[in-house]
Image 1 (cartoon, rainbow, N blue to C red):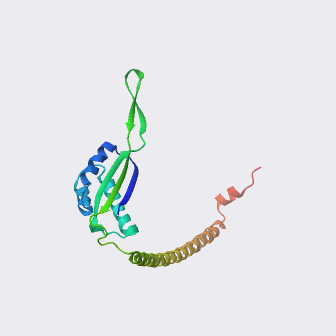
Image 2 (image 1 turned 135 degrees about the vertical axis):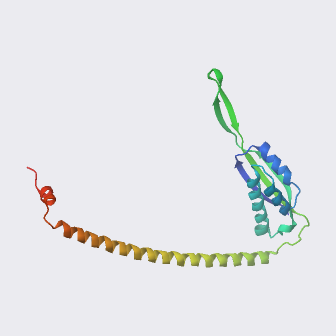
Image 3 (image 1 turned 45 degrees about the vertical axis):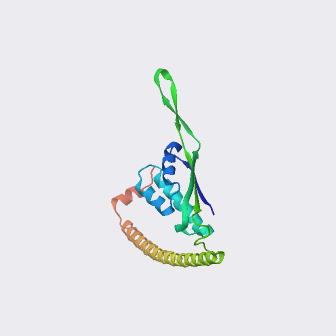
Length: 188
């Protein structure tokens, strides 16, 4: 069974991306990941992330075994080209083409059906994941509520302090000083 993952508009020229693609074609998934980790090219992290995405697609959507997968094909094509201009001699302008790539990774099983999960097993795993997600959401909601309570308490104490300081300031303003008399005077 074939599994695919796609990446569009990668801002690296297809010519450079194909070098990395040709490197991992035909390799087992684990070996390909190691190769991408060790090799030094600018497209490596993107290719690695795409390969991991394809593996996850196979495991979660189709119930395939990771150890049974290999890179069947890596298709690299040209994406949209960004056109820019560079000033040249005698008032001319030279065009610069900033090329982009489209990548598609196709994974396939070495031995058909080996280690594949049944639909029932996949449904059970999905239910477990949903339950875990609900538990974590409940825990996060409790933490938010506690933080909100603490925030309200802090806000109340701040407002009390503000009111106290305002009261003190009003008490000071009641004092008859020459500044108060000047600024209270009506202009003629």
